Amino acid sequence: MGEPEKFGKRMYWLDGFDGAARGGLHYRSKIAIDIEEVETKFGVKVVAIAVEPDYESGKASWTIEFVTEVPEEEVN
Image (cartoon, rainbow, N blue to C red; front, side, top):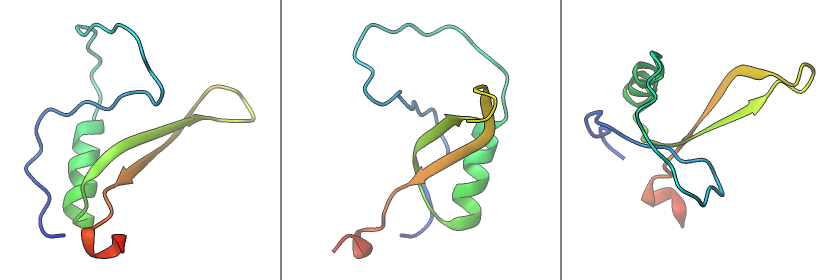
């Protein structure tokens, strides 16, 4: 697959969202650094992020799944 492209602004949308949205709410997080680190370390391109609640507590989980692009040679 080669080197992932340089990190720039990316948007990840909630699956199935079909409505109006607005930007402007900013929250300081290091997830952009985590994505860049994963892409560099593993030579992949992150194309989606999956989050699930902690099923025991029903609250947000600390685990984030980075969904990555499948290299073209692996598709067939």
